[in-house]
Length: 240
Image (tube, rainbow, N blue to C red; front, side):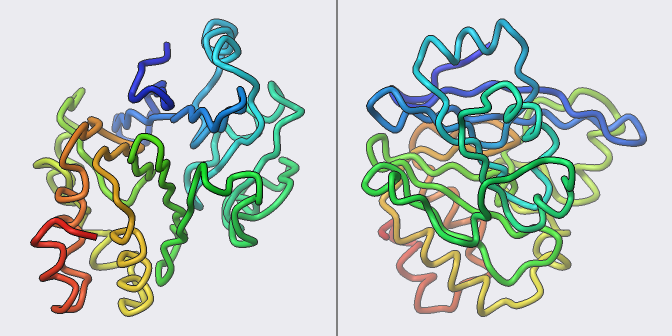
C-alpha cells in the first residue's frame, strides 16, 4: 500500500527477514518527476494491488537500486515494468548477474532528470557505495542506508541487533558504518558535504520513520563526526 510522503513522493514498505529472526522494514520511494513520469527508488516486492496504485500515479520510467545492498527486488520490478530504465550501482549489478541493468549510477544521472532530481554518490566506503537523491520541488532528501530512524522494533532479535550496532535513538548512523564501512574518511566527508549543500527539509530513509521537517538538522547531526571542523560550524547553524 502506498503512503503519501509529499505531493510528489509516496512510500511502500516491506519486511525483509534476515538470519536469526531479525526483521528489517524497508521502504521503496515512488517519485513523480513530472509529466506523469515515475521513478522507483529501492524497489520492494510489487504485487498487482501495489502496481495498480503506482500505475494510477503515472508511468514508471526509471527503477533505481541505490546502493550495493538494496537490489533484491530490482529484477522483479524491471520485469513488471520492462519499459523502464533500470539503474544500479556497480556492486548491485555484480550481485545480480541475471538481471539486465541499463546503466550504472556511477556513470551519472540521466539528462532527463535535470532540474527534477539530483544525485550524489557517497564515496570512500566499502561494501556499500550509496547514492543519495534530492527532489527539489518538495525539498526532500531520499537515502537508503546513510542513516536510520527506526522506532518500531518487531522482536527481541531485531532489538538486540540494533542495540549492538547503535541503530536506535532517532536519526543515527550505525557503529558498523562509522567504524568499518567508511574506509576513506576525506572522500566520505567530501561526499557528505555535497549532500549538505542541498536545501532539503524532509528526510526519507530506507529504514525508519520519515522526518517531515528538520531533516537537514537531523542528518547534519548524525554525520557531524565525519566532517572537518570548518563544515561542522555551518551544519550547527542549520544552513547549507
